[in-house]
Image (cartoon, rainbow, N blue to C red):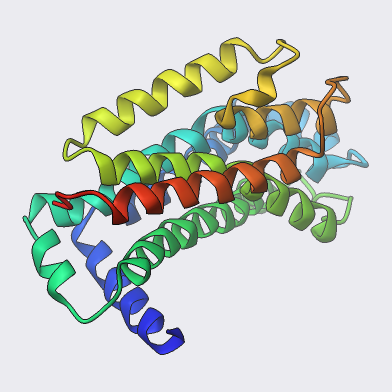
Length: 260
């Protein structure tokens, strides 16, 4: 099973080159850091004191992750999941995939793994771009010194991992929808409706019942110390939802009479 999965994953990873996933991942990762970098040019006089702030990197990270947690990452996941499924739909290749000597479980897991790898890649590139957005003004402007505070790598890594876990239910549900609908637009439309609902009900005490809300809840409760009563840690809830939705997605995929 391990060797079969490795070969299937390698094949799926190569096939994703025929989609727009990489430009999407790169664009999503660079968008917010690029805005932060360009904004530095509007207040050049304030940069010397800003870069000497004791929590400079925490401020940059906090500013960037607000948009990433609420908007960019959920939207990117919706499109990535649809694009991965559309590789087969667009080329009418599902029958060929199912004719290969690999189990349905391997096919399902390999495509899901590709989506997860792309999400992790997006977050890694986002952090690299964020570092460049923070350090480049100090290299460009002679009167701006390098940030005085060290980068809290361990803290950022823990929080990045937490946000990745928070969005796992979005990955699972969008993957379920992408396998269920031949259209690229249908899964995206349903996902956007649920995402808008999660943002609009962020102050509702039962907001955790919407699987698209965990990254936003995590950001508000940890970064802004908002008091939200939850039945468990957001990562625990998200991981549980991910397993449940993934199981349901595989059952629907395996027992579907027409698999494409």
